[in-house]
Image (cartoon, rainbow, N blue to C red; front, side, top):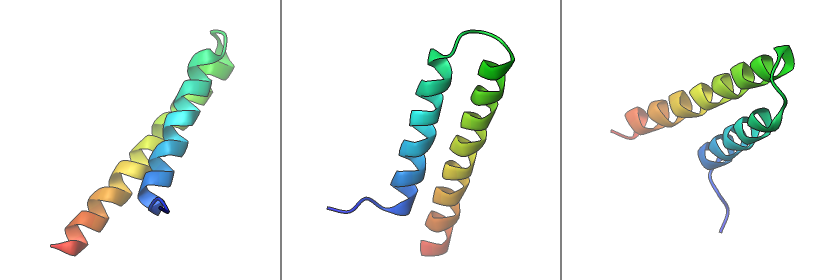
Length: 55
């Protein structure tokens, strides 16, 4: 079964967050966490827009 684009976006965001958490502390980790947060936010917004259009 093919996952929807929304699911793929969410999975990518989760993987980015996991990878960022494994980095040692410092500037690179902070930037990676920010990026993961942006990916997650994008995935949530995309899902909400899709749900609103279906109503």
